[in-house]
Length: 282
Ligand code: 3HC
Image (cartoon, rainbow, N blue to C red; front, side):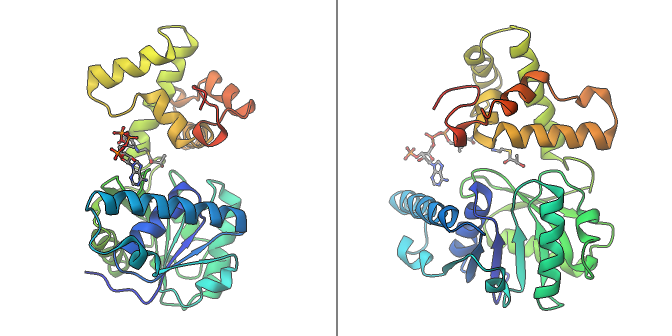
């Protein structure tokens, strides 16, 4: 069981709030940082709802209220200063992430571990923004974090063994199963999942079947809990596009080219559930 003085989370979107929640469930004192007060309040509501649901089903070791007592929200990066383990789950944008890592590196104790929940950006490159690359690793959670069992661990070129073992221990203390993937575009999950989602958009673009039938085919034909287009709406079509762009650019193989229809949806602002409209209307 890993013990932490403070578990920091950067970014309170679906991933960040889920990571903060599961951290608090694991007994860590958690500080969740976001620049937006409104987004933090939304995250608090979502976490409360999720914890109540888990409590109702007897899936918590204590009351939802007791878990919530370990969760602090802040709009000041400074609020993370005493954390010895921080997971960054900000927008999937290189410049935003790089700046955050430089700022966290300057702020935190030199022994603190910094992880990124990036879906596809090179951990080696993120670590290169800091003066502690041996203490930087990838810690990739799956959406919805409170329910999904997997964490992908990724070593950058300089990630130290002790750091990586700590990341594994923290993930396992959070009740997750840990697998190790190479620091290559998309790691393991998105390298396989995103080309499938992309292919579902190509199928839709070519009128191979209706969106509902494409989803039904994969749900009933392959026992997927959600069809690939529903899953794209759930993850965010903008996130899917950005991962497909990274796969295409970094692996240099035309088979990874993003589907033009996926790009059109993003241009239209039809980003999925969070926007009220994606492949489906919510
Ligand atoms: N917290 C607590 N409970 C939750 C919850 C949450 N965050 N989200 C859903 N639930 C509950 C629901 O309330 C519901 O409870 P009920 O049975 O009492 O009504 C129960 O879970 C089941 O939910 P649903 O009925 O809505 O739907 P499903 O049975 O389909 O389960 C699911 C939901 C677990 C999300 C399932 O559909 C699933 O596994 N989908 C695939 C998710 C997936 O593939 N995620 C990975 C995405 S890739 C990724 O994250 C990587 C990134 O880099 C892109």
